[in-house]
Image (cartoon, rainbow, N blue to C red; front, top):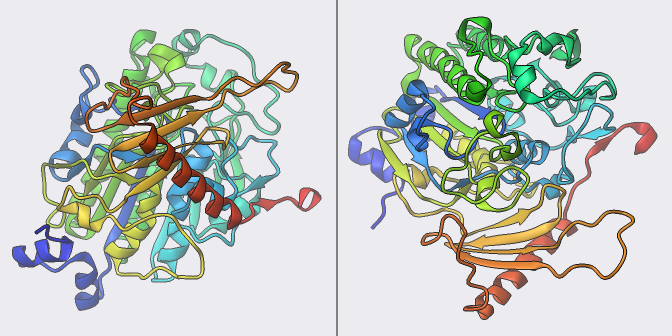
Length: 470
């Protein structure tokens, strides 16, 4: 018999998070650290041969690694929408690639985010970092459950106000000239709803995010809080402070990840020093896989196939660590099938704050996986970076049907789709296509994929749009 979280904690003689909240009126704190374009292999505890991440590795040694954890999409905006709302990006209308500075839409303020949910229970909430779900006032964090916001409203390779002043400069040259952080880019820094710095000095942004995060934790140490810390790095362009800079561009990505590790260490040490460890849940994960085309400025998916922008494992299977001393067993690993959509219902369960039932979500509660390898999730639909239905995972089986994208002026018959069937427990690298050996399974999975997509499409909710485009 597999013990659930409550059973495991009962054996330890400790109450669960929810029980503790009820008994002592103290609800646990939640911190979600979300990096940008960090690959499956880009942490020491996930097998990186050259990147040193002692602080995040310690988080894993004191918590639990999730080795079969997926982002809901292989690019930024859809992935962030999924994490915060517990929904497939298509259900909330944010599945068609990413938002830009000239975009006239964003996350609808009527959607219920993790922050919205926890505010109903008296949590202090803050978003510090990259938002990328809309830069209009109605779509910013402060309209979506967060008391405060400090960060870059979209990707750090996008310019205010219309993204037109984008020049071409080789990545190695940008890295060698760190002053390009302010001479080449015109990226804004926003506080709450106002731009406070243009261009933001990206050399110091990871450290400044951490400074703000620590200030928030210290200011709210006596009441429950939710901190969402979506780092802008290691999305290109890559920058670090002068005191940690390695001038060799071959070490650019390594340098940035190791700097993130140091800053994560500062934040976690603050939690420890304030005596908050045993009433805080920390989740560390990435928004999608590595941007492989940038080579030494992008990361590694290790044993996985492909990277960012694809529905192969390297595009969406990402590192994930969950840490809650005394509640999540230390030094453990789980291959339970999970996604970033599952964080909302998991956090609701952990905090003992029941979810509202008026809005359909797609996430499932992962608390049983804190002590078990048994998956809470049975299936997961894959959508391309541009929102096209492409696949499904059911248990250990994964089916993909990829239809090549065609330009507007393409002529001739459409190319035949590529169809794949993989057994992931035996073929994590997706090298052995079994579709010809098991066509019946492939057809059943295709039908289920279509069925799930039809339900999501039929019940999709609108994005927020400017009045001129509503």
